[in-house]
Length: 497
Ligand code: ARG
Image (cartoon, rainbow, N blue to C red; front, top):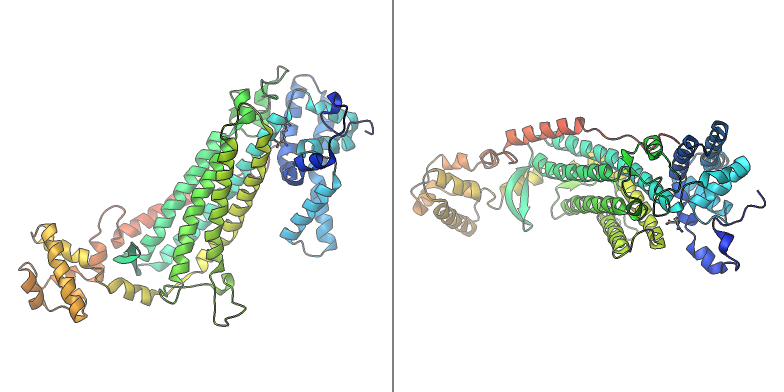
C-alpha cells in the first residue's frame, strides 16, 4: 500500500517529526517481543468485529491467515539463520532475530504499528479495517497481560522443577544432620532435609503468589477503547474467550491504564529473588573451606585466571546478584505508576523493558537452579561434626532437667553452668562426668546422656514443623504429595495464535 501513511496518526499533523525525537520515542526496538501476543490479540479482535458485521466471513478468514503469516515470518528467519549457521544456538539466533526484525521495519513505531504494516503487505487494504473499534491503549494493556501470563506460567513450571530437585536432595540426605544457626552462631542440630524443606516452604509461597497474580490479572482489556470503551457495540466476551481470559475487564479507564498486574508479577519475582539469594548465600557460605559442608559441582563452577587452586561459586553469586535486578525492576515499576493520572499515559511504555528483564532473569535463574541443586554434594561428616560440637544439645539438656521437674529458667541456668564447666575443660556436655554434673544439680542422672544424644536432641523437637526425624519424614512426604498434585496452567501457547 504505497499510499498508506507511515504513521498511525498523521492526519492532523502538518509538520514532520523531529528525527531524533521520532527514533527516541519508538518502542519497537524492544516491544517487537510482543509479536505473538499482538497477533493473538489482533486475531481475537478480528473475530469480535466480524461478529459485529465489520468484517465478512471471507475478510475474517483472510485477516486471520494474514496475521498467521505475520507471526510466522520471524520464525522463518530463525530457520534460515540456523540453516546458514549450522546448529541453532538459542541465544544467538534470538539476538539475530531481534536485529533482523528491528532492522526490517525502521518505520514501525511500535509492535502495533509493525503488525499493521506487515499485515498490509500480506493482505492489502483489508488490513486497515482491523483497527476498527480498537485503540493501541487497550492493545498494549492486553499484550502485556498476555506476556506476563505466559511468563508466570513458565515461572511456575520452573519453580516446580526446582521444588522437585530440592525434594530429591532432601530425600537423599536421609537422616543426615547439620547445625542450624541463629545469629549465624551454631544453634541446634537439624536434619539436612529439614533445612531444605525451609526453602520448599518459601518457594511454595512464591508459587502461590504467582498463581494469585495470574488469577487477578486474567481479564481482557480488549473493547476498552482508548479510554471510555469501544465506540462500537462489540461483544467483548468473544475476545476474552478467544484469549483464555476469565472475562472482560469491568472498567475501561482502569483497563487501559492499569499496570498492577505487572507490579504484582514484579513483586512476586522480587520475593522469589530474595529467597533465591538466601539459598545462594547459604550454599556460597557452606562451600567455603571454613564450613566445608558442600562440594560445588564442577559443571556449575568456574576457575580463577590468577589462582590455580580456585573453584568459585559463580552460579550462586550470580543468583544472589540477580535479586538486585528483580528488586530494581519492581521499584522502577512502582515508581512509574505512582501519581499517574487516569487513564493511559505514555510513561507506561517505560514499564515494558522492566517486565522483559524480569521474565528473562527468572527464565535464566530457573534454567540453571534445578540441575545445580540436584548436583550438590553434601559432605556429611563435617556437617555431623559441626552439629555435635559446640554444645548444640544444651537446649535438649535444659529440657531434660525441666522434664525432671526443675523450672525451665532454673534448668537453663544449670546447663549454662555445665557449658561453662565444659568450656574450661574442653569437653562437650556428654563427656562431662556425671558426678561433676550432680555437683550442679541433683536432677542429673545416668539417663541424662541418652537425653542429649544426637538422636534425642533431634527427636525432642516432636511437633508439627519440628526437626524430629519422623516429623521431617512426614513433612517431606506431604510436600512431595503437594508438589505432585500442583496444577500448573499450561500456556505459553496462545489459544488463538
Ligand atoms: N507503544 C505504546 C506503549 O507501549 C503503545 C500505546 C500507545 N498509545 C498511545 N496513545 N500513544 O504504551
